[in-house]
Image (cartoon, rainbow, N blue to C red; front, side, top):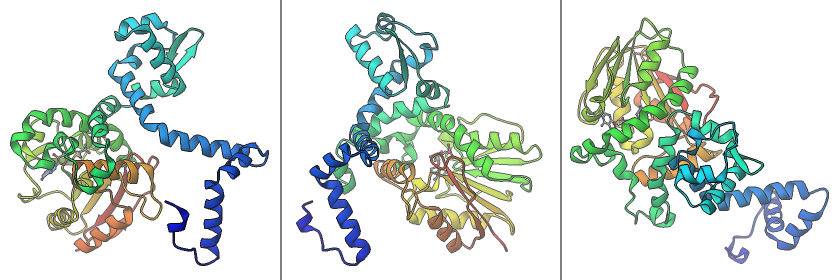
Length: 369
Ligand SMILES: C[S@@+](CC[C@H](N)C(=O)[O-])C[C@H]1O[C@@H](n2cnc3c(N)ncnc32)[C@H](O)[C@@H]1O
């Protein structure tokens, strides 16, 4: 936007910001800052940050190629040659070198002499449960993001919405793809469960019900932590059909939209559920949870959240656009969750400090009477 079109800044703070932003946008200032000893380190850092933002989509596709070609499962600490990479990945040698160089620039591989070994980030990708599936399913999301403006205007028909069958609310669509998304949900849930269980204390919980609990990965982890506890898994019939049986775990198929929630739990968790739904559905679900819990019962919400007044990449950029492509839901900040909880009648609202907030954040509350 031309600076002539901008409203004139009023007040000292706004004028200072306007002056500062004009300097940053000025090619002659950029060139001066890049050369001056006092500013060049910062100027370089900022230029790299901008370049990474511009080129980030390419880096993600380099990662996807590595995952699709399964490089991180067989390239280990010993360097392998380009001809070996080319043969195992079924690529021409030139392409294998191009990919290996790109991956090495991103610390996915590490170049050693003429060969390549696993890099630190490549090792981490191989070690994070479910990350491979997550990266693979991004192929769809990537296509949906090709025209972000059309997506924002609601003029696109995003594929991601088809991937999550419950979004379409169509049992015919649900059955064939339910297996793929349940696997992705279950594997990615290991990290979410770990973070959630670190943030909450289940000592005083007798019976935990996980609503929209997928195939039960969170409950199995919770049961392992709380040996005396009972648990109920509640999710759509196609989804819970894939849940593995476990001691102290009962499985109840149903829809939280149309069915009553099973009775008997003194704590109810909603893990990565609310951000899939619009505000009316969230209000209705929280009201059902409130009505189902006994006095003193606890609700546990765990999902990626918006940064609110301090926007965050994971919550606001990634999940903001992810839910946009799903055509439903949005990430909410802990303060927004708290407001919905208060509206539903909950009190004693807590937001524990999280170790890795980009994986999940937690808000808990109690029904007091
Ligand atoms: C994003 S997944 C999260 C699954 C699991 N809690 C996790 O974190 O891996 C959302 C879950 O909500 C379930 N869900 C969506 N609509 C539902 C409904 N109307 N009734 C019950 N479950 C529903 C989906 O089937 C899905 O398992």
